[in-house]
Amino acid sequence: MKYYIGIDIGGMSVKAGVVGDNGEIISQGSCQTFTDKHYSVMVADTYKLCEKILKEANLTKEDVSAVGIGCPGTIWSDKGIITYANNLHFDKVPLVAEFKKYWDTKVVIENDANCAALGEYAFGSGKGSKDCIFITLGTGVGSGIILDGKIYSGKRGAGGEAGHMVIKLDGEKCTCGRRGCWEVYASATALIRDTKTAMAKHPESLMHKIAESYGKISAKTSFEAAKQGDKLAVSLIKRYVKYVSAGVVNLINIFRPDVVMIGGGVSNEGQYFIDMIQKYVNKYHYGGRINPKVKIVRATLINNAGIIGAASLVMNI
Ligand SMILES: [Zn+2]
Image 1: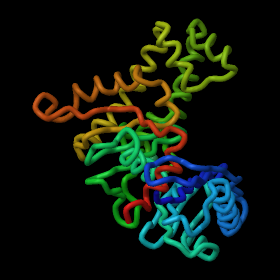
Image 2: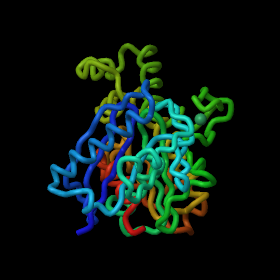
Image 3: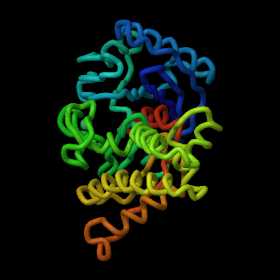
Image 4: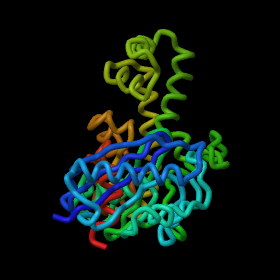
């Protein structure tokens, strides 16, 4: 078996895992990300983490074929540079060169959603497809486009940001500077915002009781109330699904993939949610009756998508 290391850099922590060429994680661990410190601190900690997980897997550095790294933001993969990652406060960081100071092996870095897309394509819900698109509905809306088995991220990795296509002209303000981006309507953050607004207007809604039982308002609040027949929640979810699906159909009309994989926190709502998106897609995608249907599926790697995705970056290269 060949072994790889997949590293998933996040705003809170760095996760790393030793991954076999079958996509199985053999050992894994994490360390804290200090976004207020110089990036070299994070790289040093990450290297130490690699040593630790290798030891746990009873392997050495010589057993590892290559290291893949996933990171949020704009990544210039060919040069190994993080061009821009706002939540990590990183600007033009030569991450691969810094990592190689500790371990001179084959190292590749990519955007984290692109990594997750590739991982799903290789080992998850996109297995067997040729072209597929991965969408993650969480704090924001991330996306990864796989065309002919390869990540498509445009010039210097700055493309493939589907979360920032406008679906509502002059709509709500987005962090990117535009208004009406998909992310501002289809993220979990957006659903929570809209849930709060609806609840404030309707004290009789079941959503109050559900939020109370969980101790907070979350993306689950409206879904659970809708499943129990709360009219307000049903209309809220219908509108949310419409926002999500509108973006999905836009992507389908441009790329016509074999499959669209939905991940992120909201995907925990499972088949109930996926079926609603599928219904909208079947009805509205271009040439719906003539062209083959595009399958909407729930992403399957869930919490391991980051590590497996980053490792899959360096398999077969
Ligand atoms: Zn935006």
